[in-house]
Length: 406
Image 1 (tube, rainbow, N blue to C red):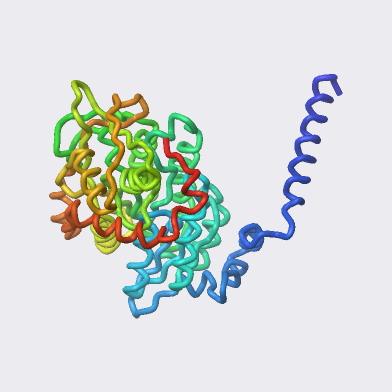
Image 2 (tube, rainbow, N blue to C red):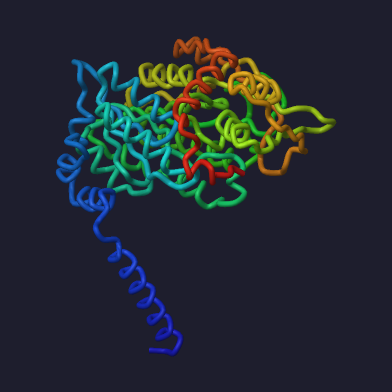
């Protein structure tokens, strides 16, 4: 053995030893580690594990004749949490999946998953790239549909941790579709795209017919990649795929990196709210869309997607509110319902991937999915603040006090 090979072998052995010591130190074994260890053995392991008496098999079993069996990825997240409940309440069987990453406080994600569990929805703690776990879940539940909402979210954070976006949004999408294409009865798949794919486009309102090849952020590029990957798996493997381009979603149990939650935290703590400005002091505008309306669109997509049989359907829809508002107007309403003035600072738009304006043309979703958003920004923010005040009636917890979105 050459000197270089000997050094390499020594370094490799040392790395394996350090890894083994780190893993072996995780005692007592956490429920999540135990769950995933048992899961990898076979789907029988998944059938028998759960919390509080609830098992994965029970969770994904439809409660009404003809009910769907749906894998919802991202049930620890905002949209997944809300949509999973509506699916289950109408009688569908639902199994969740989430890796509970630390992009924002995990305590909020865990609280969502715990609430779902109390309502009979079990969340498998696994990463999208854990293809063994996904295959075991598919073998157990025989999903008729997948609602793929899990992703590495956030436009600005992609400038800090770009590889997480490629791993989750691109690699995770491929892992999920690879597992789906090999099922005896291939599930129909609805997945989250984003309004961010419109990038530097200036024609408004944004239409699904617009060319989207100028992303303004890596996040947007990964979501555009998802749409192209969907096209490939539809063409080659006959998977039915529908992409949903969400426009700035807000509401109760929202994401603390997004405007409603982030600004409410800043106002509550007496910190400065930064409002970005474009060229010439122009203000950013967003097509803010309330969570209940987005859930209606997700359910409509699940109900209207055709079978995964060639020639399988391939669709993309905008889900927005079709009424853009300036960010200052948004802050005005938050002040009214929080009962406290914001300390505002207007700053130039940083080069982190934000765009000047979003505005959805929702005519296609209205015609084909029955999508009809009804919640005004005023009413939506009133409901959000009502939830926020109740959820944090004892004050912001330590995780949220320490959290500082980019």
